[in-house]
Image (cartoon, rainbow, N blue to C red; front, side, top):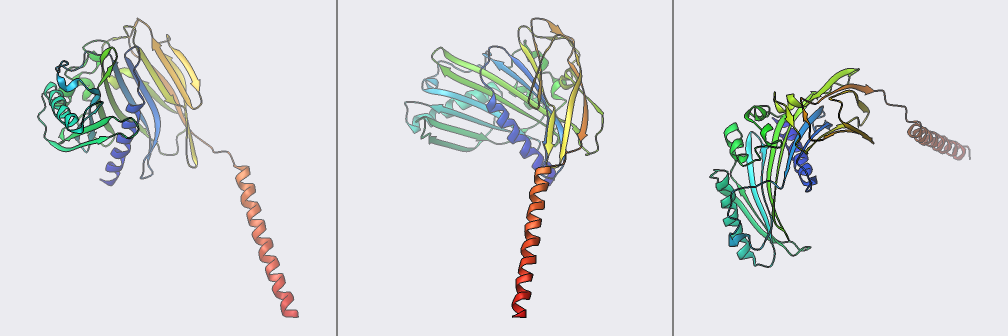
Length: 338
């Protein structure tokens, strides 16, 4: 249980950090990341995470003419998995209104969000504070946990786009990550941003799972990334001027152990490949459809090179200690003779 809780906390931290890293893009995006993870209990794995980033989507069916939205800057409803439950929250920021008005607006808008999902959840915590740097009033509402099952998840996603990658988020896809396990998790966020051109919606869906556990004895171990397997999909993947990007961490060091993950084959061939530092990026960006994306890799635990600099420093310290001890003893014997 302790290992499971620590793993989930690490997973949630990663998902939140990754979600915040996304920005508005011109096209819808599928990003698949394969990376090394070190858990608090010492176990290590390679984890695969898939992101669906839907930009300028139609959004949720809420009243966009509501007075509650007049002073709103951003609003976000997010749900994350923890301990086999969906934990849902709503947050918003406002300008040019009082805290009391911001709280009233948040109550109204958050109810509209929940109604769009057909969810009836009680509020367990609420907050309202002023951001000293921006002057915006920031509010939040936290709700009681909801079941982490197919039915609840489909409610959270009922207004996702039906095309342009949205058709890949099916019940079959969700069954890869539900029911909950310590090695899997999901994160969903609906974001509403106000700009000079009006309101802008964005939907981000993240699902993650462990690809393989590391034993420390890996040598020429074959690993593949199969997009249709991750999606639990048998249909052709339509790009429709959108983008699929695969990011692979090709080298990682855990204290005394270094692992390499080298790409040996990529299918299909209509990709753009880039190498930057310890990352290999493979991108598909066209109007064509893809039957699948399969990337074959070889995993190895490398023999760490001897650190001559560290050894020289340690040896120098040892020599200095020996000299100091010898001189102390020598001075002691000289004193006795006197």
